[in-house]
Amino acid sequence: TTCSIFCGNIPYSFEERDIVNMFERFGRIRQIWIPIDRYTHRNRGFAFVEFEQRPDAEDAFNKYVNYEIEGRKLRIDWDIGRNAKERYIGDRF
Image (tube, rainbow, N blue to C red; front, side):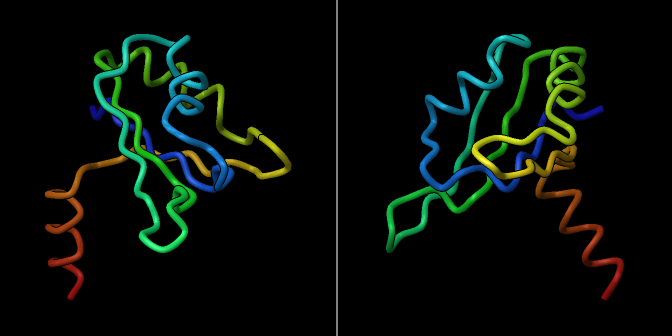
């Protein structure tokens, strides 16, 4: 039921505007989070994109599964959120 997508293996040269350009054609984006490496000041190779509507997120997800950009095959997955991840990890250990 999430509207948030994990997008991994993005080129290190990508900035927020590049991610916006990739995903905004599918619908309204609520939020984008791109972790930045504190030493290189480049992205860490992944981003999270949250859409306002689930169908828009599904369209983007389906478009970018098995998609290659600048010689890198993207890794696309649904983001279940930090709270759910903490519960899942807590249950495993």
